[in-house]
Figure 1 (cartoon, rainbow, N blue to C red):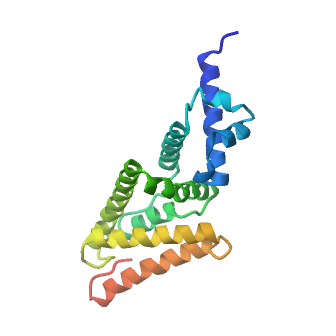
Figure 2 (cartoon, rainbow, N blue to C red):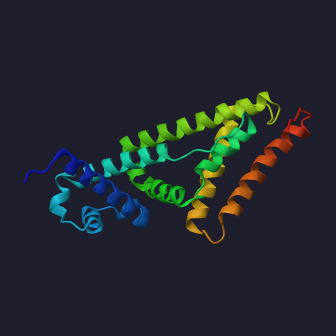
Length: 205
């Protein structure tokens, strides 16, 4: 009996789940056709219908990672500093889904650094992330919640802080449980708002 379109879509979803589980468990460097086939309970020959080579698998995995990251639920918050805090919390590995996603992102950095095209692609992704934070910083400045200054520079500092915290939490989760990650972020934001107060600027709760 010939396979239907529904069969094909179902198998493709199974393949996507297998790719995701392998990356979450083994990191990006552990992503191989053999590992995906084992997770799927199939032969590597079946996977060649989807991925003729390792490069095709890597390209698919990166697309899948970006799609799932974009589809993750985001916190809703009011304008200004609350919005900035929510965006930074969304980056941290505070849930199982966020932890899996961050493990894969961090483990993919080696591949990105080794491939000039991927390097440019990742640079663009992180530039867009900083731009998003910069808009939130500017809104907080308008409300007097953050010091005046270049919002791009403040956003770059916040981005660097949060990515550093992500790496530490992934490497040593016992030392950086979720409540500690949140407390460290709040300490960082408090330092920024304290700077605003020390300069005599209006601070609104």
